[in-house]
Image 1 (tube, rainbow, N blue to C red):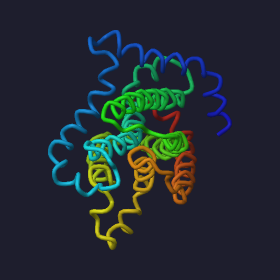
Image 2 (spheres, one colour):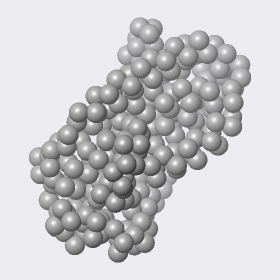
Image 3 (cartoon, rainbow, N blue to C red):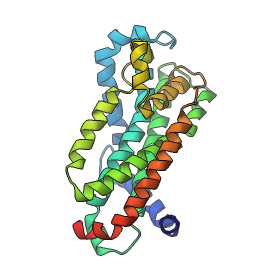
Image 4 (cartoon, rainbow, N blue to C red):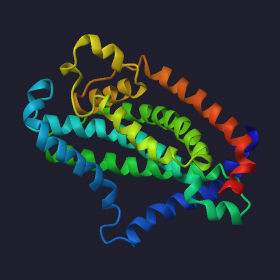
Length: 264
């Protein structure tokens, strides 16, 4: 484990430069540049808002804003996008960089570190853009928004624990890359992003809370949309679970490290 940590630390400038290059390339190679970071999630929000706002806006009475449902939807999407993007990037990171892994001798653990760093940068940009949109909609976030910065590390650790393990397995079993998006789509609908918790019968809420992202997304809603301090009692459990998954993933990575280059 110390060897992997030393590898990341030794290549910290390489990781930082790679994250910057990934971000910079989005502006150079595309006319819309970094706008694509924002357009995809916002287009998803617009679709759901247009289709479901009339059905669910009345179910969110505690948000005193005409655009309450859209604000609720964007808040939950912010949390989910970070989680799903990290998993997606880690899932494909070794396969997509097969040529580099074969030709260069460097700590492979730096590749997931770059992927995660890029996902965090994208999410922070999305956060800034959403706050600006909220201001235009007449919703002014308060200091409760700062709770987001306590929740981001929890999401990152949990997503990395899952994504890194799946990324290693994907090198040997390529079907994993096809299955994971389906599972994430199912998990998305078992998370209160599109719908508020109040529309779920109490007997089912306990079942849905088995989803570790349930309480995290709910905390995002409270901190951003409802403008209240979220209860974080179950969030440390998700963080500890993420640390355990990261530990397992790193052990598997260390054992599979030499074989990955041959398979790729």
